[in-house]
Image 1 (cartoon, rainbow, N blue to C red):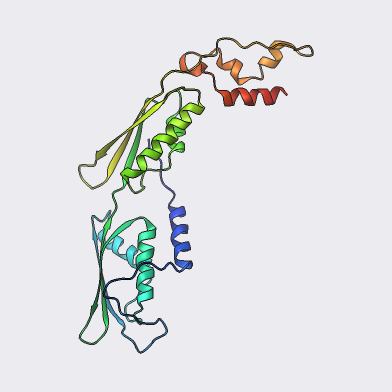
Image 2 (cartoon, rainbow, N blue to C red):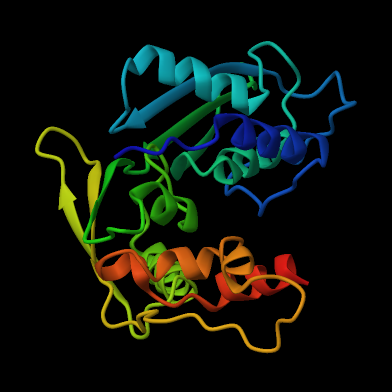
Length: 250
């Protein structure tokens, strides 16, 4: 089952980064120019190399240029260069491996960028979640199909999944992640293996102190009572569901 990431959200983050005027650490070899200094060196050329580019390499390079905000022929500014590198890093799409600032014989500046695209998550497969739907498990996670793959994100996903299962009535659930590298790229598949474990069954629902309505009339309004007739894991006791039933009865 696939769950696509929010491209609009990433775009908003990028725009905020640009508008906020992010300033990253200094770039080795950069000239200390001023954006208002029209007599200083100019950008004579911009070279971009993207390792492990996904899809069309030319399209990827053009996308990087749009993020940089630097143009050939404009005055060189170390501040603009630092901001461009910061935006690249903030995008979460590229690892900035090298930035070179070279002075030409004419005294202008040539910029060379070497980037590497981060590996992506190609697909997320869920196993062992029933009767909890795969969609519910995916909604509990914070990584999506198409997102950057970071191994350090997996422990957080395990906690989110086990929290969901405990809220659904399972006493000691476990979630294990298995990572499979794609044979044709640097991307990965995520396999989630869920062990739900034991839970409390609802065997009987009894109402006491009722004098105004029939017990059946009240029970008909309770999801907990309906669950008691279901087989296997669908008859599990869920405290949140019982709390909601009590509010409805009140």
